Image (cartoon, rainbow, N blue to C red; front, side, top):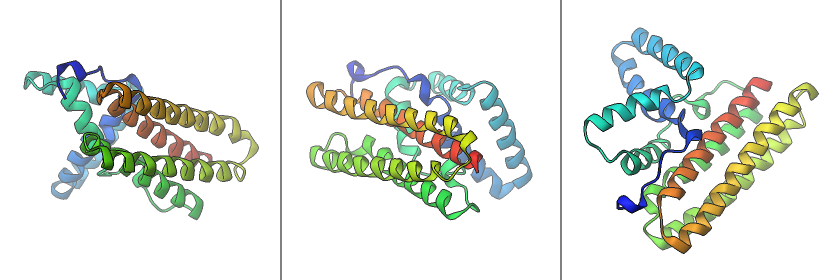
Length: 211
């Protein structure tokens, strides 16, 4: 992509940096010093919860000092890295069958979306990725809808809100794809995919908390 194809990083993606950049780094540290790695994870989690976007601000500052084209390079790198999985909401275990299945469906969708940055300039591969993402969105939404029925009534309002936000992000992603085929601008699709992954994380977190 060129300069004209760049776009600002969307606000809904700010917390993605914690899972896609900081967690992989801390996971490597964990092999050398587990105590320090766990302490840093707890610190960054608390800081990101209190100040969403703190991790992203830190990373962007470093990239700007290295004169990297932040708008383009950072968002593409973040999308690619989102498929690695390093201890985020989709990479937990030890829960019941339904939540385990939801996490797996979320991973499937996340992995499809993370491949967009590498496939968007190959029309046949990109169209196949769009088809896979549509099926994965439908599959995840169906699972969430079934799960909500099993949760206590007092949790339904919050879960319905998270489900609606996921649907809104899915629709925005679809609309951005249609626009892409008209103007051939990649940046909007990259950001929309990151935003949808962010909503996947939030939806799974909400379901896990409702148990």
